Length: 252
Image 1 (cartoon, rainbow, N blue to C red):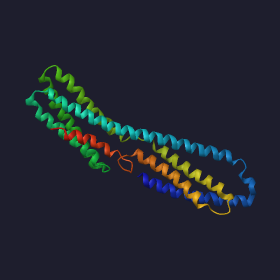
Image 2 (tube, helix red, strand yellow):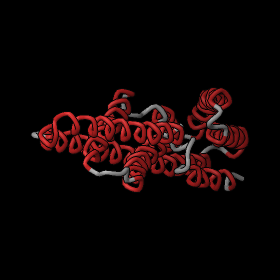
Image 3 (spheres, rainbow, N blue to C red):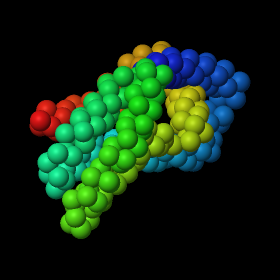
């Protein structure tokens, strides 16, 4: 998604640069150099606003990207901890609980492997949520049968494992409002128009500067949108899923 948005923005900025240049050339012919009087303050304000918006959206996207990777590691740790505490249960009650643990982790892994196929991912997510209830129904009576210590240690571990899965699910919807991206694209196009108007003083088009200007801004927007959707673009968090895969391999 980010790549198409960036490509369209790049093309749009080139068009606005050319339109601004032609408009500036026409104004110069009609009014001479006086047509640009006082425009520098407006240009500075608009470009400063664009710079601030790019900086804030990039910072937010990078922060959320890192946070999502941290949550993967946290979920892997919670899974490993809860699975180890199954040892507190009576030996004869451990096998069915361990089997449900393995099914649950398999469903969690499949959920994120299915992306960006949202329908398939939702099926695996729903299955994981069902297994949560089944696992709880098995583990709690078994922990109560084991004595006072098992519930105190196992129940918080299970709660932590279930909670972090819910956090990760809702984190997939944690993005800036759409109006932020609309404003970002609008400002980029507006700045391209202003930049093109400023290039009207040159007798010939400076394609290097025009392309560089559009490319730099489009690249920045591409990185921002790609970081916001780390399961669909170039910058992905998939490599950190290996932490959960490794935990699953250790579930003998």
